[in-house]
Length: 497
Image (cartoon, rainbow, N blue to C red; front, side, top):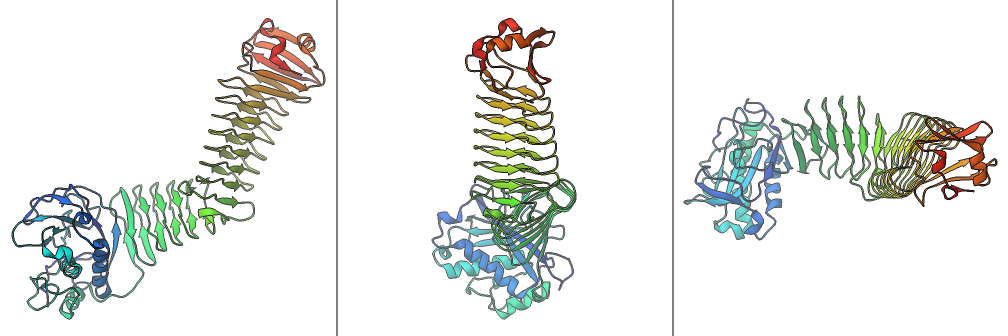
């Protein structure tokens, strides 16, 4: 049987399971000098191997896991020279090895040092065009990385590579170290902070974060992710995933597949910003998505939804909703509650509904409707239309040529940088315009809906200078204050009738 190195992954006790071990393939240009007789910098495997070497490596890890109680997931390589990063447990490098050797591997270490498990495979050996011989080499070096030394019998762990599959002696050795595979659902506990990107996962894998701000990106398999106490970003990737944020302010992205997104405590976000297809939620009816990457997704304890590049439809509940449309021409509806809606890029429609809502159009020609209660509407970029509805509203047009209609209530209107149009109708309340520009030939006050004012003469007769600006009596107890200007600055061209 293969000799044992005396160290292993997982518990130090021989015969106990190794848990989930991560592996990665390093890129080109990383320093490998000093590791055995390796020399210079690493190269890309694809630059000299004429077969799918990544699949061969993946299959080799799976072969060891079939017999020993240890599992493997491929993650993105953290970068850096050999022995400089423990973010991936077993890092595989390709490079020049001097002398007659074609591979080197480090045994596991008791303190899980950065060098533990790292492997260098030679670029010059004749196995490079022979997939079977390459498979034998990879199996052999992984065996070392798992704690097996050379064997005195004909097997994968023999000093000379003559086989391409595990033999009974190899199986006995891996089982002596880790026990026999029990096929239990694997659990991977994130080490340290930073990003964990799983390139190749396992069925029914559970990934547990730690107290740091974890960023975990899953594979195409069905996975369970738990974020613990940090402000985490969990991305399920493909598959039907279950994501649990924990106690921090988390961002959850299910990806494709019918996922469960459970934010936990604190304020959490369902993030669909990577979706090109339109997503849809009607939270007053169900917490399950009905379109795009959201199709079949179930939201639990989620306070905000971020849309993607499609034309998204997000409709809220009677509670407080937070929607960000992202790209595309989105329809965001808050319904009841004090909602915050942000359209993002594209020509969006935002309806606040009941409650004191905050609506931000973003870029594009947006339509913002505050509807009931005191709302704040900001158009931002684009030729926007802002309608306050009932209540004491704040309307800010932003850049470009906007149309502002406060509706009823005592509203504050600010057009922004470009020439804007302010619309009033009977019963509009006591409003004020903070930045009316009478010198502009394209900025107007529209009185076509005000019965008492049918021409410029009516406006002059109903206006007076005050310390704050021109006050216009529009009848029925309503008025408009044009802040910061005098009556002598107004002309007939400033008004529409």
